[in-house]
Image 1 (cartoon, rainbow, N blue to C red):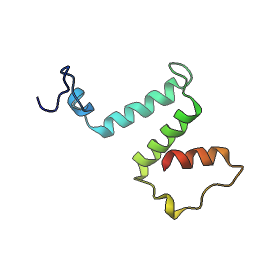
Image 2: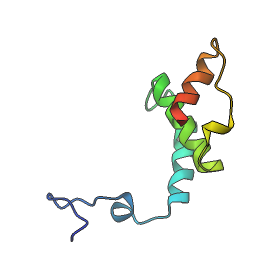
Image 3: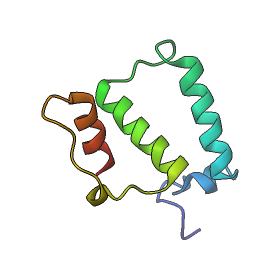
Amino acid sequence: MASEQMNGTPNTSKEFLPIEIDFKYRVACIFLKEMKDKAYHFSFDDQQRIHALKAQAEHGPLDVSNFDPPGMFDFVGKARWLATS
């Protein structure tokens, strides 16, 4: 019980829903693909954060020191750059 909060709810998603993280990731990708702009409208910043997390889940952590920063007029690239760092 040490891992539970004061109100008795689990601290981690594994305690709350004991399934593998890979399966959770695949279900989340399917949900986002099918329900985009239907069930929930993500802000631009949320979309960039989701994109960064998806890339990290698929390819591992990104070391931004290995890449040049995006150009001054690449607004989407800059938002993604900031979301990954």
